[in-house]
Image 1: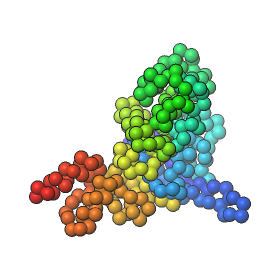
Image 2 (image 1 turned 90 degrees about the vertical axis):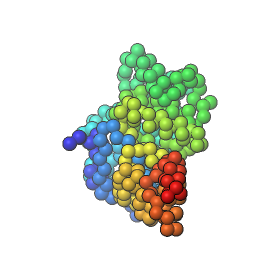
Image 3 (image 1 turned 90 degrees about the horizontal axis):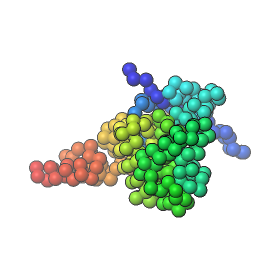
Image 4 (image 1 turned 45 degrees about the vertical axis):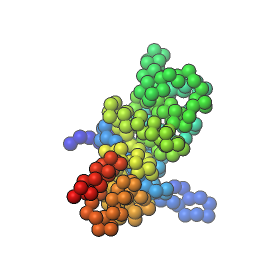
Length: 283
C-alpha cells in the first residue's frame, strides 16, 4: 500500500484560554492521510477547524493530542522543523504578508538564499518557478504594483523555489476577485497535474473544491464527510446541514428532483449540467 506523505493521527488541538473564557477546542480526534501526488480540498464553514488543521501541516501549530507526520517526520520534533517546512510549503490568504522584497525575482530568491542554496541554482530556480506560475515576464517588476492574483502567483513561486513536495494553501483566493481566483486555481491544478506536487487546498468555495480529486468536509473540528467531489456533492441534504451549499449546478438539479424530476446529482460543471438537462428534455 502506498505510504501517506501527510498523516494526521487522532489530532486534537485546543487554543489557549483567553482571559475570562474557557479553552477553545478547535480539532477533535482528526485522522486524515494524503498520498504523494494527491489533490485534496478541505472544505468547511468559518470555525470548522480547517485552517487550524492546515497550520498543523507546517508545524505552525503543534497538536495538543495525537501526532502529525510529514513524509514520516514528526512535527513535534523541534530539530526537524526546517526539514518539514522545506518539504511542506504553505501559501496563505494574503499574499502581501508573504512578499518580502521590492523586486519580484528577489522575493522568489529569498527562501532558497536563506536555505544556503548556491547562487547559480537560485538563479535557475527563480527563473523556472516564475515561468511555472506564468510570471516570468514580471521578474523585475515591483510586487506592490501587481494585481492580487499576480501577487498570489508570486507568493506561490516563492514557496516553489524551496522545491517542496507538498503545497498547503490556506484559502489562497479569499482576497481575490474572480479573475485572480481563476488564475491562481489554474496554476495550482497545473502544478499538481504536471509537476506531481501534492496539493492540500483549504477553501470554502465549492467550485474550487470540485477541482480536487478528493474532498474532506470539516465541521466543528471533526471530519464530517469524505470522498470524491461527485460523491460528496451528491449528498446535498448533509452538506446543507453542515452550513454549506453545494455547487450551483448540483443545487439546480437537486431543486428539480424535489419537484419530482428524475435527475442525477453528479453534474459538477455547467457543461455536464446542461447535458443532463438536455438528455432529460429529449426523453
